[in-house]
Length: 393
Picture (cartoon, helix red, strand yellow):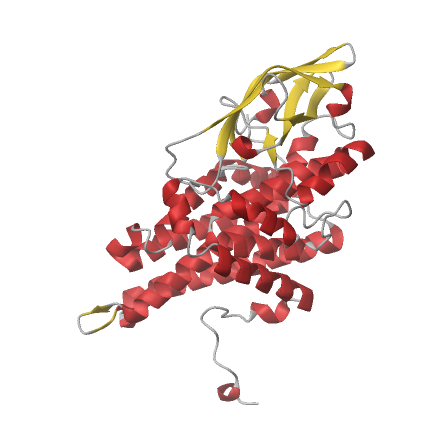
Protein backbone atom coordinates (compact mmCIF):
# COMPACT_ATOMS: atom_id res chain seq x y z
CA UNK A 1 0.00 0.00 0.00
CA UNK A 2 1.27 3.44 -0.89
CA UNK A 3 1.54 5.93 1.94
CA UNK A 4 -0.69 8.17 -0.16
CA UNK A 5 -3.48 5.64 0.42
CA UNK A 6 -3.19 5.84 4.20
CA UNK A 7 -5.65 8.05 6.08
CA UNK A 8 -4.43 11.48 7.03
CA UNK A 9 -3.50 11.87 10.73
CA UNK A 10 -6.29 13.19 12.93
CA UNK A 11 -5.21 16.52 14.49
CA UNK A 12 -6.94 15.36 17.71
CA UNK A 13 -5.34 11.88 17.73
CA UNK A 14 -2.30 12.39 15.58
CA UNK A 15 -0.52 9.15 16.52
CA UNK A 16 -3.67 7.06 16.46
CA UNK A 17 -3.39 6.22 20.16
CA UNK A 18 -7.04 5.18 20.14
CA UNK A 19 -5.95 2.07 18.22
CA UNK A 20 -3.82 1.06 21.23
CA UNK A 21 -6.79 1.06 23.59
CA UNK A 22 -8.89 -1.98 24.36
CA UNK A 23 -12.64 -2.09 23.86
CA UNK A 24 -13.41 -1.65 27.57
CA UNK A 25 -10.96 1.24 27.83
CA UNK A 26 -12.56 3.03 24.89
CA UNK A 27 -16.01 2.45 26.40
CA UNK A 28 -14.95 3.97 29.74
CA UNK A 29 -13.27 6.90 28.00
CA UNK A 30 -16.26 7.62 25.80
CA UNK A 31 -18.77 7.26 28.64
CA UNK A 32 -16.94 9.79 30.82
CA UNK A 33 -16.41 12.08 27.84
CA UNK A 34 -20.16 12.12 27.13
CA UNK A 35 -20.96 12.73 30.78
CA UNK A 36 -18.56 15.66 30.91
CA UNK A 37 -19.96 17.11 27.69
CA UNK A 38 -23.55 16.77 28.90
CA UNK A 39 -23.20 17.75 32.54
CA UNK A 40 -20.10 19.91 33.02
CA UNK A 41 -18.64 21.67 29.99
CA UNK A 42 -21.31 24.34 29.70
CA UNK A 43 -21.46 25.14 33.40
CA UNK A 44 -17.86 24.79 34.54
CA UNK A 45 -16.87 28.42 33.69
CA UNK A 46 -19.66 29.64 36.00
CA UNK A 47 -18.71 27.21 38.76
CA UNK A 48 -15.11 28.40 38.49
CA UNK A 49 -16.16 32.04 38.57
CA UNK A 50 -18.45 31.43 41.55
CA UNK A 51 -15.79 29.40 43.37
CA UNK A 52 -18.17 26.46 43.76
CA UNK A 53 -17.68 22.72 43.48
CA UNK A 54 -20.80 21.11 41.93
CA UNK A 55 -21.79 18.72 44.71
CA UNK A 56 -24.89 17.84 42.69
CA UNK A 57 -22.64 15.77 40.40
CA UNK A 58 -21.31 13.50 43.16
CA UNK A 59 -24.06 10.89 42.89
CA UNK A 60 -23.77 10.94 39.10
CA UNK A 61 -20.03 10.30 39.33
CA UNK A 62 -20.80 7.43 41.68
CA UNK A 63 -23.42 5.97 39.36
CA UNK A 64 -20.80 5.84 36.62
CA UNK A 65 -18.58 3.80 38.93
CA UNK A 66 -15.88 6.50 39.07
CA UNK A 67 -15.46 6.63 42.86
CA UNK A 68 -12.77 4.14 43.83
CA UNK A 69 -13.10 2.72 40.33
CA UNK A 70 -9.69 0.98 40.38
CA UNK A 71 -10.39 -0.80 43.69
CA UNK A 72 -11.79 -4.33 43.98
CA UNK A 73 -14.92 -5.25 45.94
CA UNK A 74 -17.02 -3.25 48.40
CA UNK A 75 -19.14 -1.76 45.62
CA UNK A 76 -16.12 -0.52 43.66
CA UNK A 77 -15.92 -1.03 39.90
CA UNK A 78 -12.59 -2.91 39.97
CA UNK A 79 -11.41 -1.43 36.69
CA UNK A 80 -7.87 -1.31 35.33
CA UNK A 81 -5.36 1.44 35.96
CA UNK A 82 -5.60 2.49 32.32
CA UNK A 83 -9.39 2.84 32.62
CA UNK A 84 -8.89 4.94 35.74
CA UNK A 85 -6.36 7.11 33.92
CA UNK A 86 -8.63 7.63 30.93
CA UNK A 87 -11.47 8.65 33.24
CA UNK A 88 -9.20 11.16 34.97
CA UNK A 89 -8.19 12.58 31.59
CA UNK A 90 -11.78 13.13 30.51
CA UNK A 91 -12.77 14.68 33.84
CA UNK A 92 -9.86 17.10 33.77
CA UNK A 93 -10.65 18.00 30.18
CA UNK A 94 -13.55 19.82 31.83
CA UNK A 95 -11.72 21.05 34.93
CA UNK A 96 -9.04 19.96 37.38
CA UNK A 97 -11.60 20.36 40.15
CA UNK A 98 -13.67 17.43 38.89
CA UNK A 99 -10.66 15.17 38.54
CA UNK A 100 -9.35 16.26 41.92
CA UNK A 101 -12.61 15.27 43.61
CA UNK A 102 -12.58 11.79 42.07
CA UNK A 103 -8.85 11.40 42.70
CA UNK A 104 -9.09 12.37 46.37
CA UNK A 105 -12.17 10.24 46.95
CA UNK A 106 -10.76 7.10 45.34
CA UNK A 107 -6.98 7.28 45.68
CA UNK A 108 -6.45 9.29 48.85
CA UNK A 109 -9.50 8.47 51.00
CA UNK A 110 -10.75 5.07 49.81
CA UNK A 111 -7.41 3.51 48.86
CA UNK A 112 -5.87 3.65 52.38
CA UNK A 113 -8.99 2.06 53.86
CA UNK A 114 -8.92 -0.61 51.15
CA UNK A 115 -5.18 -1.25 51.55
CA UNK A 116 -4.66 -0.82 55.30
CA UNK A 117 -8.09 -0.91 56.94
CA UNK A 118 -9.67 -3.64 59.02
CA UNK A 119 -12.49 -5.72 57.60
CA UNK A 120 -14.90 -3.74 59.75
CA UNK A 121 -13.56 -0.42 58.45
CA UNK A 122 -13.79 -1.57 54.86
CA UNK A 123 -17.36 -2.78 55.24
CA UNK A 124 -18.43 0.35 57.07
CA UNK A 125 -16.94 2.97 54.79
CA UNK A 126 -16.07 1.75 51.30
CA UNK A 127 -19.54 0.86 49.95
CA UNK A 128 -20.90 4.20 51.12
CA UNK A 129 -17.95 6.07 49.60
CA UNK A 130 -18.27 4.22 46.28
CA UNK A 131 -21.95 5.18 46.21
CA UNK A 132 -21.18 8.84 46.90
CA UNK A 133 -23.07 8.76 50.20
CA UNK A 134 -19.89 9.51 52.16
CA UNK A 135 -17.31 12.02 50.89
CA UNK A 136 -13.74 11.63 52.04
CA UNK A 137 -10.67 13.82 52.32
CA UNK A 138 -6.98 13.18 53.04
CA UNK A 139 -5.23 15.08 55.81
CA UNK A 140 -1.44 15.02 55.42
CA UNK A 141 -0.11 18.46 54.46
CA UNK A 142 0.25 21.00 57.27
CA UNK A 143 0.73 24.78 57.28
CA UNK A 144 4.47 24.40 57.92
CA UNK A 145 5.05 20.91 56.53
CA UNK A 146 4.33 20.45 52.83
CA UNK A 147 7.20 18.74 51.05
CA UNK A 148 8.51 17.28 54.33
CA UNK A 149 5.47 15.60 55.90
CA UNK A 150 7.61 13.26 58.01
CA UNK A 151 8.06 16.16 60.43
CA UNK A 152 4.32 16.74 60.85
CA UNK A 153 3.19 18.35 64.08
CA UNK A 154 -0.21 16.69 64.23
CA UNK A 155 0.08 14.20 67.06
CA UNK A 156 -2.07 11.36 68.37
CA UNK A 157 -1.68 9.99 71.88
CA UNK A 158 -3.26 6.98 73.51
CA UNK A 159 -5.69 7.59 76.36
CA UNK A 160 -6.86 4.25 77.68
CA UNK A 161 -8.50 2.51 74.74
CA UNK A 162 -8.97 5.77 72.84
CA UNK A 163 -6.78 8.01 70.71
CA UNK A 164 -6.71 11.80 71.11
CA UNK A 165 -5.51 13.88 68.15
CA UNK A 166 -4.34 17.48 68.04
CA UNK A 167 -3.08 19.36 64.99
CA UNK A 168 -3.85 21.29 61.83
CA UNK A 169 -3.90 20.20 58.21
CA UNK A 170 -3.82 22.61 55.28
CA UNK A 171 -4.74 22.71 51.57
CA UNK A 172 -7.09 19.75 51.95
CA UNK A 173 -9.23 19.05 48.88
CA UNK A 174 -12.84 18.14 49.76
CA UNK A 175 -12.22 19.10 53.40
CA UNK A 176 -15.24 21.37 53.78
CA UNK A 177 -17.68 18.87 52.25
CA UNK A 178 -16.18 15.67 53.67
CA UNK A 179 -17.99 13.25 55.94
CA UNK A 180 -14.80 11.33 56.71
CA UNK A 181 -11.23 12.55 56.98
CA UNK A 182 -8.26 10.18 56.67
CA UNK A 183 -5.84 12.00 58.98
CA UNK A 184 -2.18 11.11 59.35
CA UNK A 185 -0.60 11.87 62.71
CA UNK A 186 2.64 11.14 64.50
CA UNK A 187 2.48 8.72 67.43
CA UNK A 188 5.02 7.15 69.74
CA UNK A 189 5.22 4.18 67.39
CA UNK A 190 5.41 6.18 64.16
CA UNK A 191 3.03 7.85 61.72
CA UNK A 192 -0.46 6.31 61.82
CA UNK A 193 -3.61 6.87 59.80
CA UNK A 194 -6.93 7.64 61.54
CA UNK A 195 -10.48 7.58 60.21
CA UNK A 196 -12.11 10.72 61.59
CA UNK A 197 -15.83 11.33 61.02
CA UNK A 198 -16.08 15.06 60.48
CA UNK A 199 -18.89 15.41 63.01
CA UNK A 200 -16.54 14.27 65.80
CA UNK A 201 -16.30 16.88 68.58
CA UNK A 202 -13.15 18.97 68.23
CA UNK A 203 -12.93 18.56 64.45
CA UNK A 204 -13.57 21.58 62.22
CA UNK A 205 -12.96 22.49 58.58
CA UNK A 206 -12.48 26.02 57.27
CA UNK A 207 -12.61 26.60 53.53
CA UNK A 208 -9.83 28.59 51.89
CA UNK A 209 -11.32 31.48 49.95
CA UNK A 210 -9.99 34.01 47.41
CA UNK A 211 -8.27 31.33 45.33
CA UNK A 212 -7.39 32.11 41.72
CA UNK A 213 -6.78 28.43 40.95
CA UNK A 214 -8.90 25.30 41.45
CA UNK A 215 -11.87 27.54 42.14
CA UNK A 216 -14.35 24.79 41.21
CA UNK A 217 -12.94 22.68 44.04
CA UNK A 218 -13.24 22.78 47.82
CA UNK A 219 -9.90 23.46 49.55
CA UNK A 220 -9.83 23.60 53.33
CA UNK A 221 -7.93 23.82 56.58
CA UNK A 222 -8.66 21.01 59.04
CA UNK A 223 -8.33 21.69 62.77
CA UNK A 224 -8.25 18.84 65.29
CA UNK A 225 -8.56 20.04 68.86
CA UNK A 226 -8.53 17.17 71.36
CA UNK A 227 -10.39 14.95 68.89
CA UNK A 228 -11.14 11.70 70.71
CA UNK A 229 -11.51 8.51 68.69
CA UNK A 230 -12.00 4.88 69.65
CA UNK A 231 -9.17 2.45 69.10
CA UNK A 232 -11.07 1.06 66.12
CA UNK A 233 -10.49 4.33 64.22
CA UNK A 234 -6.80 3.68 63.52
CA UNK A 235 -5.79 1.96 60.28
CA UNK A 236 -4.22 -1.27 61.54
CA UNK A 237 -2.33 -2.27 58.41
CA UNK A 238 0.43 0.32 58.22
CA UNK A 239 2.84 2.28 60.43
CA UNK A 240 5.21 4.92 59.07
CA UNK A 241 5.39 7.30 56.13
CA UNK A 242 5.04 4.42 53.66
CA UNK A 243 1.29 4.63 54.34
CA UNK A 244 0.52 8.17 53.19
CA UNK A 245 3.22 8.07 50.50
CA UNK A 246 1.65 5.00 48.91
CA UNK A 247 -1.64 6.90 48.76
CA UNK A 248 0.09 9.81 47.07
CA UNK A 249 1.52 7.47 44.43
CA UNK A 250 -1.99 6.28 43.63
CA UNK A 251 -3.26 9.83 43.29
CA UNK A 252 -0.24 11.03 41.32
CA UNK A 253 -0.89 8.32 38.76
CA UNK A 254 -4.30 9.89 38.12
CA UNK A 255 -2.63 13.27 37.69
CA UNK A 256 -0.27 11.83 35.05
CA UNK A 257 -3.36 11.21 32.92
CA UNK A 258 -5.62 13.99 34.14
CA UNK A 259 -3.45 16.93 33.12
CA UNK A 260 -3.44 15.63 29.55
CA UNK A 261 -7.19 16.29 29.48
CA UNK A 262 -6.62 19.91 30.44
CA UNK A 263 -3.81 20.16 27.89
CA UNK A 264 -5.96 18.62 25.16
CA UNK A 265 -8.76 21.10 25.78
CA UNK A 266 -6.29 24.00 25.54
CA UNK A 267 -4.70 22.62 22.37
CA UNK A 268 -8.05 22.04 20.67
CA UNK A 269 -9.25 25.52 21.64
CA UNK A 270 -6.12 27.05 20.12
CA UNK A 271 -6.37 24.88 17.01
CA UNK A 272 -9.99 25.84 16.37
CA UNK A 273 -9.32 29.50 17.07
CA UNK A 274 -6.37 29.52 14.68
CA UNK A 275 -8.58 28.44 11.77
CA UNK A 276 -11.23 31.11 12.32
CA UNK A 277 -9.38 34.17 13.61
CA UNK A 278 -8.40 36.37 10.65
CA UNK A 279 -5.43 38.72 10.59
CA UNK A 280 -3.72 40.28 7.56
CA UNK A 281 -6.32 38.72 5.31
CA UNK A 282 -5.99 35.06 6.34
CA UNK A 283 -6.48 32.73 9.36
CA UNK A 284 -3.71 33.07 11.92
CA UNK A 285 -3.18 29.31 11.61
CA UNK A 286 -1.67 30.00 8.18
CA UNK A 287 1.24 31.91 9.74
CA UNK A 288 4.45 30.04 10.44
CA UNK A 289 4.80 31.18 14.05
CA UNK A 290 1.28 30.04 14.92
CA UNK A 291 1.88 26.67 13.28
CA UNK A 292 5.07 26.34 15.31
CA UNK A 293 3.05 26.85 18.49
CA UNK A 294 0.41 24.33 17.46
CA UNK A 295 3.00 21.72 16.52
CA UNK A 296 4.84 22.23 19.80
CA UNK A 297 1.59 21.62 21.70
CA UNK A 298 0.82 18.58 19.53
CA UNK A 299 4.24 17.03 20.21
CA UNK A 300 4.09 17.41 23.97
CA UNK A 301 0.48 16.23 24.20
CA UNK A 302 1.15 13.06 22.24
CA UNK A 303 4.41 12.27 24.04
CA UNK A 304 2.66 12.71 27.36
CA UNK A 305 -0.16 10.40 26.32
CA UNK A 306 2.26 7.66 25.27
CA UNK A 307 4.09 8.00 28.60
CA UNK A 308 0.82 7.78 30.54
CA UNK A 309 -0.31 4.72 28.59
CA UNK A 310 3.03 2.99 29.10
CA UNK A 311 2.88 3.63 32.85
CA UNK A 312 -0.71 2.43 32.97
CA UNK A 313 0.05 -0.80 31.13
CA UNK A 314 3.01 -1.42 33.41
CA UNK A 315 0.94 -0.70 36.53
CA UNK A 316 -1.70 -3.18 35.41
CA UNK A 317 0.76 -5.92 34.45
CA UNK A 318 3.44 -5.76 37.15
CA UNK A 319 2.95 -2.75 39.39
CA UNK A 320 4.64 0.62 39.31
CA UNK A 321 7.45 1.96 41.45
CA UNK A 322 6.85 5.47 42.82
CA UNK A 323 9.87 6.84 40.94
CA UNK A 324 8.13 6.05 37.65
CA UNK A 325 5.00 7.81 38.83
CA UNK A 326 7.21 10.81 39.68
CA UNK A 327 8.56 10.81 36.13
CA UNK A 328 5.03 10.84 34.75
CA UNK A 329 3.82 13.57 37.08
CA UNK A 330 6.89 15.76 36.52
CA UNK A 331 6.82 15.48 32.74
CA UNK A 332 3.11 15.63 32.07
CA UNK A 333 2.23 18.48 34.43
CA UNK A 334 5.13 20.52 33.11
CA UNK A 335 4.08 19.78 29.52
CA UNK A 336 0.41 20.52 30.21
CA UNK A 337 1.22 23.88 31.76
CA UNK A 338 3.44 24.78 28.81
CA UNK A 339 0.64 23.80 26.43
CA UNK A 340 -1.87 25.95 28.33
CA UNK A 341 0.47 28.93 28.31
CA UNK A 342 1.20 28.53 24.61
CA UNK A 343 -2.49 28.16 23.79
CA UNK A 344 -3.15 31.37 25.68
CA UNK A 345 -0.78 33.24 23.35
CA UNK A 346 -2.59 31.89 20.29
CA UNK A 347 -5.87 33.24 21.63
CA UNK A 348 -4.14 36.50 22.64
CA UNK A 349 -6.49 38.77 24.63
CA UNK A 350 -9.38 36.34 24.22
CA UNK A 351 -7.27 33.78 26.06
CA UNK A 352 -7.62 35.58 29.39
CA UNK A 353 -11.42 35.44 29.53
CA UNK A 354 -13.66 32.64 30.77
CA UNK A 355 -15.37 32.65 27.38
CA UNK A 356 -12.58 30.24 26.47
CA UNK A 357 -11.25 27.43 28.69
CA UNK A 358 -7.55 28.21 28.45
CA UNK A 359 -6.89 30.65 31.30
CA UNK A 360 -9.00 28.52 33.66
CA UNK A 361 -6.95 25.42 32.87
CA UNK A 362 -3.73 27.41 33.03
CA UNK A 363 -4.57 28.70 36.52
CA UNK A 364 -5.62 25.23 37.68
CA UNK A 365 -2.41 23.64 36.41
CA UNK A 366 -0.37 26.09 38.47
CA UNK A 367 -1.80 24.31 41.54
CA UNK A 368 -1.43 20.83 40.07
CA UNK A 369 2.25 21.62 39.45
CA UNK A 370 2.64 22.09 43.20
CA UNK A 371 0.29 19.67 44.92
CA UNK A 372 1.02 16.00 45.58
CA UNK A 373 4.72 16.64 45.17
CA UNK A 374 6.22 19.84 43.78
CA UNK A 375 8.26 19.90 40.59
CA UNK A 376 11.36 20.17 42.74
CA UNK A 377 10.49 17.15 44.89
CA UNK A 378 9.82 14.92 41.89
CA UNK A 379 13.09 16.10 40.35
CA UNK A 380 14.96 15.04 43.48
CA UNK A 381 13.14 11.70 43.62
CA UNK A 382 14.32 10.99 40.09
CA UNK A 383 17.78 12.33 40.86
CA UNK A 384 18.11 9.91 43.75
CA UNK A 385 16.80 7.06 41.59
CA UNK A 386 19.50 7.54 38.95
CA UNK A 387 22.44 8.44 41.20
CA UNK A 388 21.65 6.55 44.38
CA UNK A 389 22.31 9.75 46.31
CA UNK A 390 19.66 11.60 48.33
CA UNK A 391 19.59 15.39 47.96
CA UNK A 392 16.56 16.17 50.12
CA UNK A 393 18.57 17.55 53.03
